Amino acid sequence: MSDEDNLQKHSFYNEIPFQSPVDPGVSLLVVDADGRLIRDPFHNVVISVRFKKLHPDAVTPKYAKPGDAAMDLVAISKEYDADLSLIVMGTGLALEIPESYVGLIFPRSSICKTPLMLSNHVGVIDSGYRGEIKFAFRHLDRPRKNYEIGDRIGQLIILPYPKIELEEVSELSDSERGTGGYGSTGK
Image (cartoon, rainbow, N blue to C red; front, side):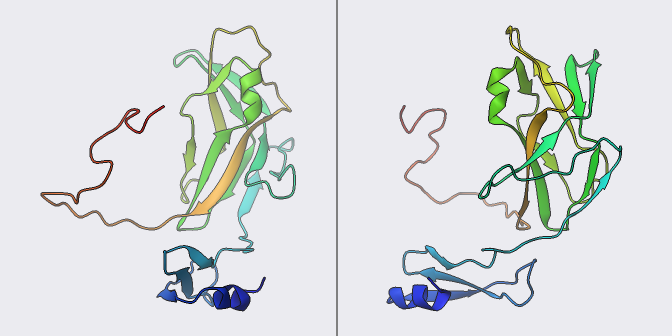
C-alpha cells in the first residue's frame, strides 16, 4: 500500500514538521487522529556506516536472516580480566557511527546455552567512539559450553536518537500509573 493510499484510509491526519537526519528530503511525520504513525521517514531507509577491520580475522557484521533487526558480531579474541572477573571477547571491528545515532550491542539468544551473562546487559556505542567493539561477560556457575573464538557472540543495532533537553520543574503531571514501580502493574 502506498503512502497516499494509506493516507486516504484515514479521515483525519496531521502532518508534523520533522527534519530527518538521514534524508533531508523527508520533512514530515504523518500521524492519524489517535497519534499512530502513518508515514515513517525511516521506513526502508538504508544508512551507510563505515567500519574498520582492526585484525585480519575480523568478520564483517551481517544480518542472519531477512527481516532481522540486528547484525551478528563474531569473536576473534578472548581474554580473562582477573581484576574484574570478566571474560572479554573482541570482534576486531571499529565503527564510525553517524552523529545523532547510537550503536547498541545485545547478547544473542544463544547466550542461554552458555554459562555467560553480558556484564552490562546492553552496550552503548556512542558516535564518537572509534575503538574495538568488545563484549565483557560474567561467568555464572553453570556447567555449559562457553563462547569461543569464531562464535557469534552478540548483536548490533544502530538507531537514531533525539537530543533531549531536560526541564527541571517543581511538580510533574499526574498519570494513571503514578509512582508505582517494581511490579505495580501486576504479574
